Image (cartoon, rainbow, N blue to C red; front, side, top):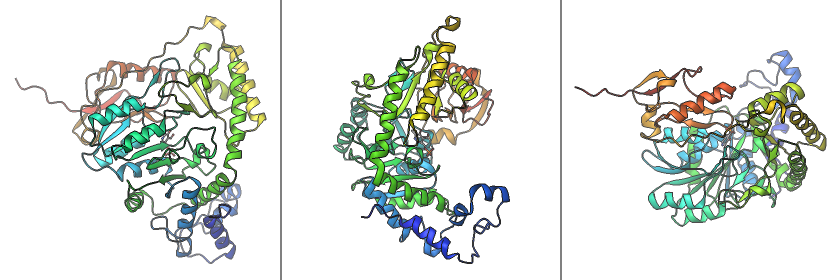
Length: 489
Ligand SMILES: Cc1ncc(COP(=O)(O)O)c(C=O)c1O
């Protein structure tokens, strides 16, 4: 196939150039009906291809023309049999993966540290999650992925599972041996679904971890918008082999997708695919070499630590993506959240995420030696400001144990509920999500028994200002739990 072509984007441009008289939505009609300031800021080019699924422009819900051609090119570029474009982020692609293989009562093996979209899909499907504990890194205070050994144990106990979902790479760029996990799961003839939200580039460079399609996985939700250069909210679902049914996937995708699909997002996927197919290796190379330089320099800054090859060797740490800089700031005596705010206020630098102990900075093809040096200058000053000043005490890494799931998430979600004070909720079954965003991984999910350690963990996060989200009461004073019938005496 000709990877230099962009059937979707080119057709949209030609359509706009023909300048048809439009009597259809969007009502702004090439920007003329838009707010003047917004139109001037965005430019008429963008607004002229903000179109909808009129006949010449194909339909994402049943692609037969330019969208079909663009998706076929994407499949080839990502080493898949089929690619489906998502205008609802990787969350939409993840929900589609799960709903296309799981129905009510079906088991699905998933790591406990999954993104909330996985658990939303499990609730929609009425499926039963079998949780596998991720490997916890107690030095860094982060979770890695699941190991082959843990997946093997889960399969031995639940050989009737309908799918196994793994995260590869994690938000912090760490990977277990995906190929080994895929081969193991396939020996049970069960499909492997990969959350590849943080791996859009890995397919294009052999120094990066193996991609889901390279490892032979059946489906992968890949955030082209996060690292592959397309616009925010656009993503892709790649599919391979015959354990999953592409027609069923198309149907589910369509059920979950708006009928007013954004052609700006679709065109950005088409062009990002071209760029990745033609220049992906060079783009990745650029990011890798800048990140290697940054990592070396960061590790020479007093009080900072950024893991690299030294993390390898464990079962959950088989490979890693060096372009993600996880900077451990605990030895400065500040939280990651404080570091994030300090960088914003003092240096106008925005990082990807922070937690209690770390900040995550992403080096991408969009970086230059200048941007990396600006980050390094700020980190050096942060170290000068905090390291060994006021005899800072080291923080103790606290990660609560995985809660016990006593009801399926769906049963808990739809059960009779009441609100109780969070501080007094230990022992109760929660009926809503509580998660930290980013990364969007639940501390508690519907059906789990709240422990005192969970409550302390939530309060610790709130106290330092980390973004704890999800419950109906945004102040988190009250939490929604399942009503318990008092014993009749
Ligand atoms: C591991 C993981 N999976 C899935 C998602 C969802 O991706 P999106 O924001 O494109 O819906 C995210 C988002 O941060 C994520 O971190």
